[in-house]
Length: 120
Image (cartoon, rainbow, N blue to C red):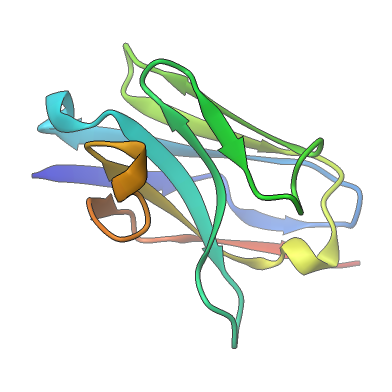
């Protein structure tokens, strides 16, 4: 089993920044890919960004150039630096961890979610 604990959400004004963290514990040796997903009210959960243990990254088109995903393998932690935030970034953000990138979103482990609200 793997446990994921997210932190860093909150309320920010448009144009502001937030940094989300997701710390993994437990059987982390099985985890080779971690990602961030988000779900806004009335919408399906969508991929925001993901990163493999080797550092390969993928971003949703809507966040490219504004968000950066990174990970500290020694700390089993993944980060999401969010800059130039827009109201449409408002959602609950979830951390996901899986054995491979292809399994993200449909398998693996999920955090409890952290609310990000972008509003003036």
